[in-house]
Each structure stands twice: as structure tokens, then as C-alpha cells.
Image (cartoon, rainbow, N blue to C red; front, side, top):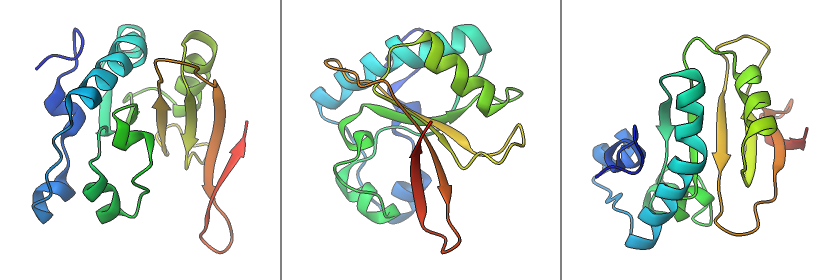
Length: 150
């Protein structure tokens, strides 16, 4: 099933963890509609600007969220978020372009160290009331994940 010109449902639901653990990662019709909105309004526009977008995580069922230590209330579990990179593009440059050019709910520069290929981008889209929240995620000295406003 196509979600946008260049993105498929399979691509946004693929999970090695789900496959290994036999966890269903099938979204509901509502989640699929959310994924379409995310693809059309965010991911497709990024692909049009930068080329190939490599999705590392899209939709996650509540069981998959639990299996990877994420919250079942995550926007991933609603079909509203994806984690990705564009190979050959510095993730900070990509993050800046997203925040200056697209409508989004959250944009998070995750675990970026200053090296062009470090970390990844998390972006979410909500049909109503996008907050345009910009954050960075990093680990503190106790290895705890911290989210700070940018």
C-alpha cells in the first residue's frame, strides 16, 4: 500500500524486533491514515528536497513499544512519527531545514554529536494542532536520556 508517492506502508511498519519476537506490528485504519498524513506532509517533502529517506522506525504497535522500552503512548504507536536519516546529509542540516520549511508536531535531533552521520531525526505530524516543538535528545553522565528544547 502506498502512503505517498515514494513511501509504502511496509516501509513504515518494518521492524526487525517485531519479526524476531513474533510481535504483530499491523496498524489500524486510523493509524494508516495518520501515517499517510505524516508521509504526505513531512517525509515526502524531505525526500523531494534531499533524496532517499531511510526510515529506521515508523509505526510501532503498543506491544512493540513495550518490547523496545518505549512508551505505548508514543506518537509512533499512533502512526504519527518516524525516525530517519538522509544518507550524505548532516543530521543538523536536515533538522534545520525541517524546522524552517515544514509543518510538524515535534522535531527531535536525537543523539547528534556534531559528526555529520551521528544520530537521527525524529519527526511527528498531528492532523490538528501541531506544536512545532524542537528538541534534542542526548544522554547525561548517568546514561539517562535527556530531552532539551532547542
